[in-house]
Amino acid sequence: MTKIKTTRLFGLPLAIAAAGLAIALPAQAQARDHSHHAPAWQLTPARNAEIRQDVVSLRNAIDRAAARRTISQREAAGLRSEARAIQQTHQRYARDGLSRAEVRTLQDRVNRVRVALRMERRDWDGHRG
Image 1: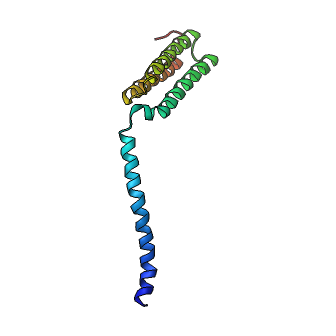
Image 2: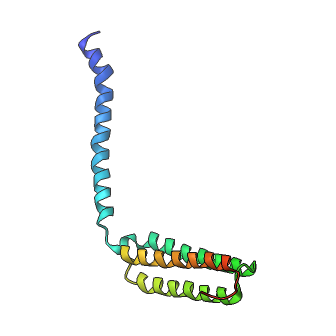
Image 3: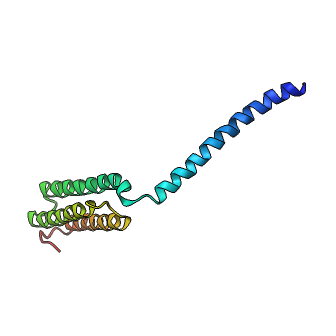
């Protein structure tokens, strides 16, 4: 094989691959840097949607449990009240954009109400607590 044919066979694909990496790596590094230090207001839409969906799903779970009579109406009212308080806190936090700490606080509260719902389903006493 001549030197020119060898260069064409191996050099051209290597040059194309190198050019692709040269373009992709800086773009990837740049995107990672921006997402890591983005202000709260830039990350809020996804967080808002996630928290909103968690509260809606929690309220639906409470309503289903009450409809199936696995919890009493009194227990359901207390859990609904807690879910409403989470929703109000979320609205207050979301005005300025959600910080990571606020998202964590809201997620923790949603999870506590989910656990309380699970416990109420299992106790069969009809009373909160």
